[in-house]
Length: 499
Picture 1 (cartoon, one colour):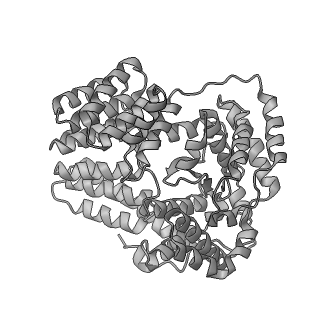
Picture 2 (tube, helix red, strand yellow):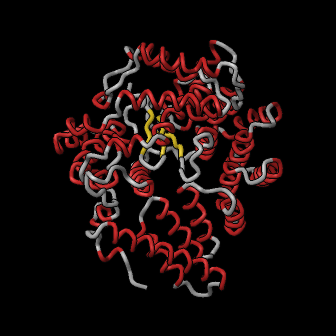
Picture 3 (cartoon, helix red, strand yellow):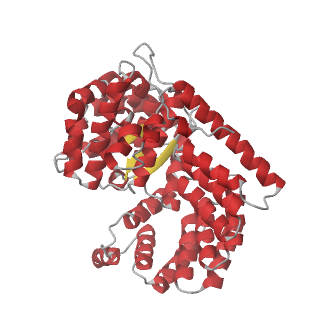
């Protein structure tokens, strides 16, 4: 079990060799998009550099299908994390929280505030406060700039070697690729480099202390961090050995549990406000991360043989039925649950999806429309509705729905891509190219974003508003490319096309 041990430092340089080792965008442009780390005299990375590295590593995880792109779970995790990051007092920090498709118990912070939690860890938690405790610890690592501190003595060359080993270890362990892991370990005598990048005991203690403050101030149970440590300790001896154990430098100890419990007592009178969505989203996660050949209907049938299902478990069963092409059975359960729990937004979206899968398209559309009146611009509802509209050849309506949503709510890369597809299907070629440029920007690929904007501007019959918007965005992208070249003289000249 490797909780907290692949924190940001373990992946900090992954932007370059993550792609090279895995064959993802393995060209010179990838190497040239890494910021110049400077010399050991440069004490810390800038926040902009940290963000760029983290974004590129996250793109590699997405390319390997390790990031869960589920609208409900993703939206819930971001909302949960935002309650914590709002307590940091750092207006210029951008925190993004995501779920990794991995049954092992782990969480990590990438440079730039990208915080990942394995699905296995979420399933091990027993309350929202325990899950928030994990996010609070990782958020604290970012807030205290531990990642930048840990690499202040590293040169660019050692960062490259470290990234090769650590990125290969991370992805190899997730994907079960032994060859990839062995190859990563061979690069630059990676174990020694790993030891130079581990968080120190004082930094781990600081992350615990700051994290508990974030936890309590955000309205969660401050003792949840120590209770989850205890749960981890109980499971420690049961876990299979893993290559990621190499990355563990500070295991959960009695001392750490005792310290976090003592700190939490300072907040024992603080009010606690947990969201009822936690149990529903955890049950949804159980189904959506299950392997395709696993019949989850059988899982819930076995539970029924021993006891009555809770309502969140009935929700999971309905999702399993939908996955097994039994939409009518799912509709019956979801209708009942929606009536019993009218405030659980995820039920409405799942009901609309089930109705659409059952061929009851007008009912599905009516369900989505009425739900969006109750919960305007709800992201999961809008995404599922847009997907249904596109399947019904109503791409223009889907496009307008998504534009209305994402002009107000920041979209994920998958949602940006959906908007581009909707624009293309609706015949709005200029917008389709524009949103594909935004998709590439979200992954840190400035060169591809610039190319898509050139195609957008070359599209016939653009409105004056579109042309002005596309040109303004291209000016921004080209300025970023120029800045990239100034900061890294080795950047390929082809990355920048002169205006």
